[in-house]
Amino acid sequence: MTVLVTGGAGYIGSHMVLELLEAGETVVVLDNLTTGFWWAVPKEVTLIEGDMGDQALVGRVIAEHGIEAIIHFAARIVVPESVADPLGYYLNNTSKTRNLIECAVKGGVKRIIFSSTAAVYGDVKVNPVTEDTPQNPVSPYGRSKLMSEWMLQDTARAHGLAYVILRYFNVAGADPKGRTGQSTAGATHLIKVACQTAIGDRPEMAIFGTDYPTPDGTCLRDYIQVTDLARAHMAALKYLRGGGESGIFNCGYGRGYSVREIVDVVKQVSGVDFRVVLQPRRPGDPPAIVAEAARARAILGWQPIHDDVAAIVGQALAWEKALRVRNAA
Image 1: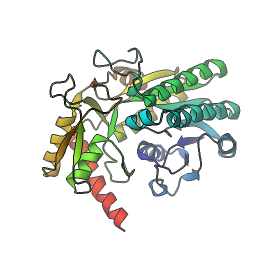
Image 2: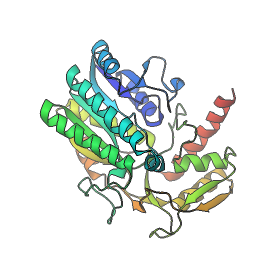
Image 3: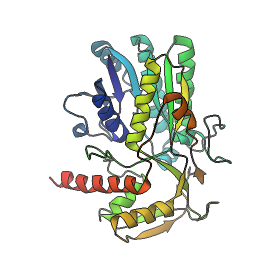
């Protein structure tokens, strides 16, 4: 049995590939390498450069490789960018996901694990949020993902697909063994940006918004370590193969850190008091969102093991230093 990983050369996808390999799975990666990297895919994995919305290509991949399950990461993920380019996000995240799902149906693939986001909840009034919290996304990014969730659910009812939708909170850190990490140039992840500033790859970093209704005025987020997130996908795959019912699960630790708190942790771990500038709020950013992830633990059997923000920052710092060496070579 072979697992197709869309976006498997990217940040989260490359960690997923490592987890699959360690579990003895046969893996095929489909990635257009827009934000992913060929070198992030282990040599023993088949890497196909192409677009997950290309139905002719995806259909061939499913047939030729005997794809049994799809883990779908490929997406554009920058909230402010989605506000400026909504049609681009609906094309890439929604329309192309629709094409991928159709290929799965036609190709006889019965299991899909979909990478969704806490952005589907929007500006929540009560934290932590459960999977039953009403969805009210405030950005085209969040809406593009929620529409994809709906399409997958409707298609599953009509065609007998089994799915798990994982709603991520803020993904951070890197592979503890140093094999992969967040490598995309210009990435907007807070911990990555702060670590780049700490090692001198950026002259300064910005905090966007200091007047939110939070304890220190900056946005509050739940940070989940990327390998723990990949392991949640492995748990979901095992669950579906065991006949588990389709479902939606939050992935987070249930504890929020403000932007200022994260910046302080990066300064402490790195030992560098780097420059921080204060900027106005960005469009599409809710003040606070924290996960209630008890359902994933109880039903999928997911047990996170990297819930330590200082360790997460340390991993991210180590990866940025390694990436600097790689890019200089």
